[in-house]
Image 1 (tube, one colour):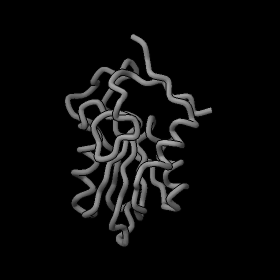
Image 2: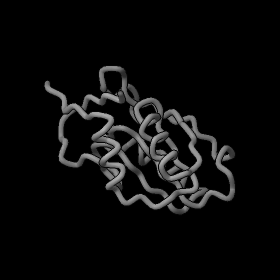
Image 3: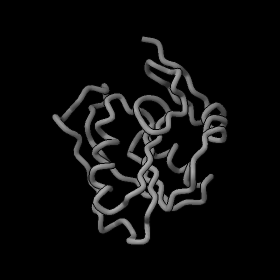
Image 4: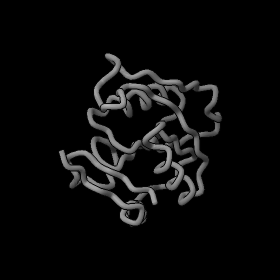
Length: 136
């Protein structure tokens, strides 16, 4: 299966064209969303937090029936009102939906962003297959 190659330059260009209002906190989903979340948090001058949500194995097959998360809401500052949750890819939306469900008990304004897939904001909506990201 061929993968669509995405360069660092292309990703930065798409981020720059995307209308993203400044959140109080950017949450990156480890591992795939870490670099993208860090870039966006830096660009928006927002705080950054990384969380782990385990769902797929290294071959991209579901490993669990439902995603597992390591997010404690006590780690989220009470002044946080607006959150941007970032991951690289969202195939089914389950990972982002889990993060949103947990965060909704504390934060009312939650937006999701991915390179491709299912989210509120998608940087490469035209890409339907797998991606190969070159962060250099």
